[in-house]
Amino acid sequence: MSGSSFGTCFRVTTFGESHGPAVGCVVDGCPPGLPLDQTALQAFLARRRPGQSKLVTPRDEEDAAEILSGIDPESGRTLGTPIAIVVRNTDQRSSAYGDWAHIYRPGHADFTYDAKYGLRARAGGGRSSARETVGRVAAGAIAEQVLRARFPDLRITAWVERVHTVSAVIADPLAVDRAAVDGHPTRCPDPTAAIAMEHAILEAKKRGDSLGGHVRLVIQGVPPGLGDPVFDKLDALLAQAFLSLPACKGFEVGSGFASADSTGLAHNDTLRWEQGAMTTPSNRAGGILGGISAGTPIDCRIAFKPTATVLKPQMSADETGNNVELQAKGRHDPCVLPRAVPICEAVAALVLCDAYLRQRAQVGDPWPGLGGPLRR
Image (tube, rainbow, N blue to C red):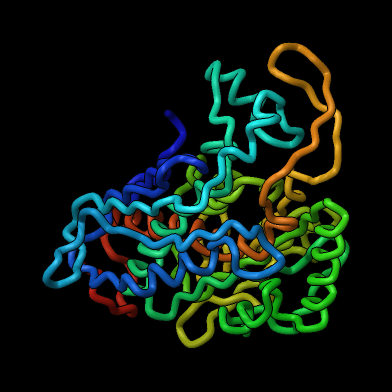
């Protein structure tokens, strides 16, 4: 199946269906010699797993990662060969879809997969399910370790900034860390907004409805020079990666769509040297100029639609040409935002790791002031 691989030098292929025996990934291009922290990899997966709280789907998956290849069993270091990771599906319930598997679900990819392939995985959406992101998170956990080995100050932090009409107020986005984000089940570091978001999600769940919102992502410690001109701009690759996520409907970097209401004089980030490094007093560019990282924090927003599966009757259509009513059942997130946070962080790591390795392959390692075991 085409479309299941991403990246050039650090290339990731995900596999598996929502209700199949397993999901996972193959990572090709990881540099050799990296001491892979498998505990950190598992912790990354645990942050996206279902069943974490009453705000998410009760599907109970341990999401235990089995590394099948690419790691030296004695030293725990990467071999430079493909790293295969599998995560078994242990709590899938395909029978929940039996009564209405022939009906195309509104907001899902049932009809379009049928139109493309002439058949589809009827239980759980198959490859279009958010279950597919397990492989991306596992691969992203490795990518982040590659990046941190070379750029020790790099930090990728995402949080829920908005759910439906409730928005967080964050005085200093650069001060937010993962501990603060994970301090509440909503993954919102604003305590007041987090309570309001939780109430809104639970009320929607009670009504059989769902809510959307957006994730804020800030990446600090990115060196200048990552990304390639024209077609492979760093922000374009980030956009592609985020928009490939299930339920993602929008992406912006820096001032984003608000820049259309500004003027050139008001919008430009003025440049200045500080202690030998280029900096800007403002960051409306979001850390990327001309598709290349500027060394300032990369600042993004990623918008997610409400979960497509709702537990109220809706009109739809079936595979035999009939217009019918659908009463969906099953276990689903009433809001994807809390579990989207680690997924967004992982996807960002994949893009940056690939950009770093591409830069190193083309011009060598141009950051003499930065150390790390992967600098060679």
